[in-house]
Image (tube, rainbow, N blue to C red):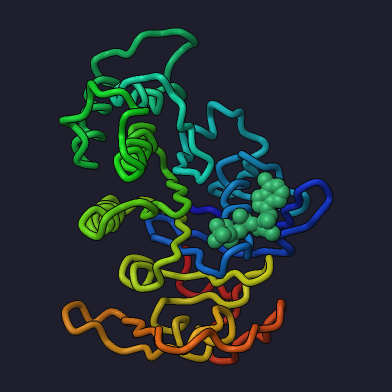
Length: 281
Ligand SMILES: Nc1ncnc2c1ncn2[C@@H]1O[C@H](COP(=O)(O)OP(=O)(O)OP(=O)(O)O)[C@@H](O)[C@H]1O
């Protein structure tokens, strides 16, 4: 199910932090959002999982304005792993994951056999089946992250929205999570700080800077030394990953960052404009 973000503004108490963002998350593709701290990635994602209302513009789900759907209906289509954490849930791991079934149930209805199967499968997929009976609050940060991903998977959404899903995860679990996303092949909108992970897993990337989408395209076209310098202020070489052939960014960690980029960078000429629809469904 395709997601269109059209001329989106997001504001907090009248302060605009995302301005005129346009992008498409094509059906069945993994669409990555990258950008420096504070560039607006979470704010944009919050409008897709309806934590925030757009100040202007629209989010379309398969052509329908999200705001025309009831919360329960949109929750059957869109599930999120947000940054704002429900950290104090006094529930077991299994109960937290079962919350993903809520949009399919009448108020206060108990889980049926299908709900229990889907919950168990989601826990297995994230490698947390053995922890099903533990208290959620007793888990480590990375374990909580995986349980909350299982909750989103149990929601059986058409669209997964993941805000920094690899936060807290060790390298093995990062790799497993990214493989899971690739295998599931559903429409996924994901923000990532790890640009090498983004290069490996995303079909298309959108780069945010100071509230605007400044470049869009396949990772190979977007992740260039010039863009990394201009948007992220780092010196880096982009080489070919010796095992996978994906772009691999080799950062120069020996020297401080480059001089601060202007808040509205020039759109790099070699990157396809953000509004391009070529190759999208
Ligand atoms: N709840 C909020 N209330 C007020 N301002 C906010 C809120 N959340 C974010 N902001 C501001 O909005 C701007 C964009 O923040 P946002 O969290 O969307 O960026 P981000 O790209 O996700 O950053 P990061 O990479 O650090 O997670 C920042 O200036 C931030 O301070």
